[in-house]
Image (spheres, helix red, strand yellow):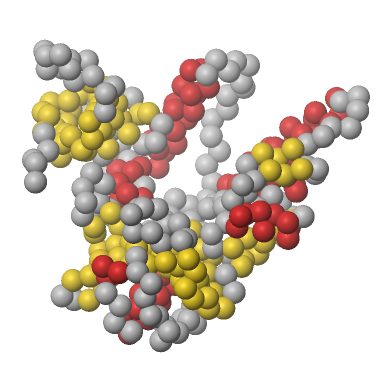
Length: 335
């Protein structure tokens, strides 16, 4: 296996969209000045990095050593897997808010959008346990089958027992599925991923496998309302159904969003942080109401890329447009 190149003494600049810091090569050759997108570093830090991807216009790299540390740096709560789930774990929360504010401002300026009134971000809610959807991989070894996350910048996996980002229902549901797979002695190499999703107090899941396995002995754990098991083409890393093999219980969930009951299932798109989404929905409603008040005729509202129709239904859209079948089925039911 080819050893990945290490670049020493890289001074990091600002953050860019997605949680990476920006560095620039300073090596005196033809690649001098090439940009580096840096995982695991903070603006102002001096670091050594390992190259994980080479693109024509930039390198993607991961910090291997911090030589000069930022005052904002904190030890991540999930040190071996945080880059795969939440790269912001290496900084204190208020620094995270400040950096994201800077990214947002720069994005609007780059797109030439003027006239935006900027206020500081309102901070509310927690920074852990907020997600209502998680995806886990699997890892099998001499100790049996485990949930896992990929380690960014490598082909390796890190064994986990849940995620600090997920609510307790998700973590309990994922572990319950794992224990059932252990009971019927399923080999880790035949499994692709497990997606779990929760409403207020119910959990559903979708298990993706690489072979058309005989899982007739599988029993739905009491922690889940429903679970579908899909064969998923192993040539693709994505958790996409190729063929449904088994269905247990009911995989539909319902949440109240902005005063409207919204139905969705384990595979349809839905917001992962409902309290934050409701704040955004209030703002969207306000803007639509302002346009309606100024309009001399009735507005025709179309919700593009609508998912299960949450925004469109909330603002009175006459048409919602969506391509994904799972979302379309749920949008019809919600309408």
